[in-house]
Length: 580
Ligand code: ADP
Image (spheres, rainbow, N blue to C red):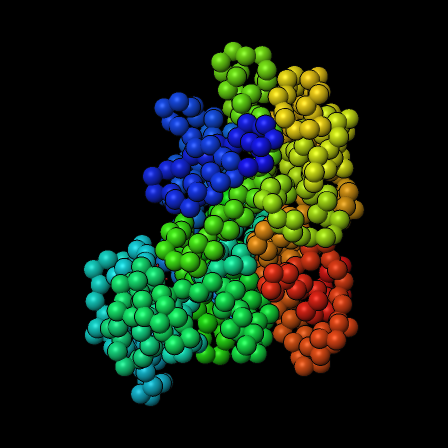
C-alpha cells in the first residue's frame, strides 16, 4: 500500500501464535511485511499483535515506533468476576441509577451467602413470579460452562463462577433472541480516549426463545461458537435468515423500519461503554504505545433498554460468514489507522537497524528509561483510500493531524524539511518551528532519503527531520487548554468507521487528563444523559426534522451513529449550554 508504493520502507507486523488471520490478511493487503524472528531483531517490528496479554518486559522495552495491541491490566474489566466487582463499587460510589445497565451479579463461592439472601428475599417479595439466574465460569468464554436456573437447588458449580440476574425479557426478532457485539477501541487510558465502531455484529440464538426450557442453549445463548452447531443454523429462519449473524447496518435498517428511536439507543450504549471503561481507568497504567480492541456484549430488552453482559478481551475475529468478512476486515483496517503510523516509524526503525550494524545514517539516541512519545494520541494518517476516513470537518482536525497532544512529544507527521512541498493530505504542522528546534537539538538527521515520491525524487540533499526521542525536552504549554493553538491534541471525531465517543466535550477532555477525574466525568455523562433525554421530546424532534435545531458545532462534535454519515449529538439536542 501507500508506503511501499511510495518507496518507503514497509512497516513490519509481528503476530503471536493465536493472533487472528484477518489481521495478517489486512496488513499484507496494506503493504506491510511480516516479521521474521530468524532474520530480524527485536527493534525491527512496528506492531506486535497477540491474542493473549504481553509480558511486563514487552511494555518496558517498547521503542517509540512500536505499538502493542493490548494495554496492561485489562482483566480488570474483561474477567467476569472483576467486572462484577467494579460495577458494584461504581454503583455504590455513583448511584444505581447511573450504573443500572449491569445485571446484579454475585461471585461464588465467596458471595454465596449474599446471593442466598437476595434470592430468598426475591422469592418472598415476587410472590410466585419467576426470577431466572444465569451461572457463568469467571474465566471462560464462548458460552462454555454456562447454564440457567430458576431454583437454587439447580445451582451446581465446581469452579469460581458468577451468578447473574438473567434478563428474561429480551427484545426478539421473529421470536429469536439476539445480542450486539460492539467493537470498542481504547486508544489511550490517560487521557481516556474511546472510539466505538459503527459496524458491529448482531448475534442470534438459532432456536426460538422460550422460558419453558432453560436447558436449550440454542434458545438462550447467542454465542456463535454454540449456535453454529445448532440444528437450525443453516436453515432460513423467519426474518433472521440463514446462519446466526447480522451486520449492525442490517440491524439498523431493521430498527428504522420499526420506527424506533435509534439515536437514544446508541447514546445509551455509548454511555455504558464510557461508564464501564471508567472503572478501569485508575488500574491501567499509562502506556501511550498501546491500544485495546474490546468486544462489548450488549443485550437489549423488550423495553429497548440496553444491558451490559460482558466485555471481551481479544474479541473473536474469525471470518466465518459474509457478515464477519464485511465487518471484521474494515474493523482491523480502521484499527491500524487509529494506531497512527507515520513514515517516520519505518524510517526510525530502519535507522535503528543501520545504527546497530554500524552505519552512520541515523543515530537516534535511545536511552534506557526515557519517556516514550504519546504516539497514539496523534491523529492517524488515514492511509486507507477513503476520503472520508477522518471526517471531522472542524479545524481541530487539521491541527491535530500534525501535532500530538500538548504533553506529547511533538511529532511531525511528514518527516521532510519544511521547505519541501508537503504531499497529499499531510500538512505541515502549525508548530513546525518549535518541533524542528527540538529535532535539531536532538541531532537526528537522515541524510539520504531514498523516496520515489514525486516531489522528492530529485532532491537528494533533502534533510529528513525525525521527531525527538526525548520527550522531556518538550515544554508543556503554559497556556490554558482552550486558549492553546486551535484544538491541539484533541482526538479526531471519526477514523474510518470508528467514532469518538469519549471525550465528548471540553469538560470531559480536561477531566480525563493525567489522573482522570472520574467523578467529574461521571457527572458530565449524567448531565448529557439528562439533556438528551429531555431533548427527545416530541417538540424537539419536530424541530430537528425541520432542521431548526442547530446546536453549537463544537470541536468535539460528539457523534452518535447514523447511517454512514452519523448525525452529530449537537444536532440531536441543543448543546448550547453544554459545550462552552
Ligand atoms: P461468554 O464469555 O461465555 O460468551 P457471556 O457473559 O457473554 O459469556 O454470556 C454468553 C451468552 O449468554 C450471551 O451472549 C447472552 O446471549 C447470554 N447471557 C449472558 N448473560 C446474560 C444475562 N444476564 N441475561 C440474559 N442473557 C445472558
